[in-house]
Image (cartoon, rainbow, N blue to C red):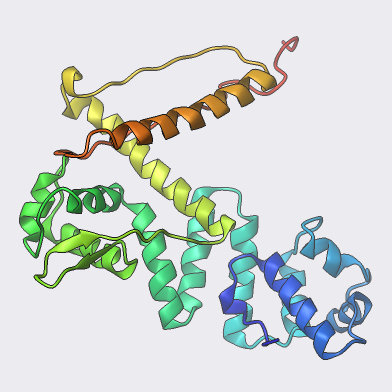
Length: 279
């Protein structure tokens, strides 16, 4: 079993679990009590409670844990930012700590994770990926950018191609024409949730602009406000999942696309739970 590297993790609890398992295998006498003594913590069960998600680490305890695990300066900085990233409450806070983590990582890891983070931050990356499946594109970035609505600059289109190629979403064939691949992004759930949140925010901003940018006959915007029980809410979510799957199946019935579309569905509470009876 290799020594776990803190840079291979984006969830500090997973790292603590891997660290404990490694130390236990290396030294059978290693225990939660032993670590507590080394970290100068009164509770022998604190490490396990943190690892299991029952407790969190404050700034002072982050330093004690880093010292007890004998992390070097760069590793300790990464560990601290990883704790802050996992415990952050807002998307903006998570983004700040995630970017700091990526800056501390090794170059190859930064390339992949940084590209994933970049991909989800701009609406037009996924749009260009879809365009590649429709048009014949080699290196005319100005024309590629003008095909989008709203259009983007040539340098933005070029950056999009670079990011998509780094993620192996597209690849040039023998003639230099870019083709779609079947590759998919895979990350841990904590990074995935941040990436998806970034993408959803970008798409919601795009949807707001579409109201003024497009005539009603080429768009469909609707809203619905209703009262639901928790049971009904769960049923609605299941129906939305089924709806999206049906749309994907319907897409395959029309094999010659000529335009890229964006479909957003937003379903969220407008009141606190159990509002009934409160005044």
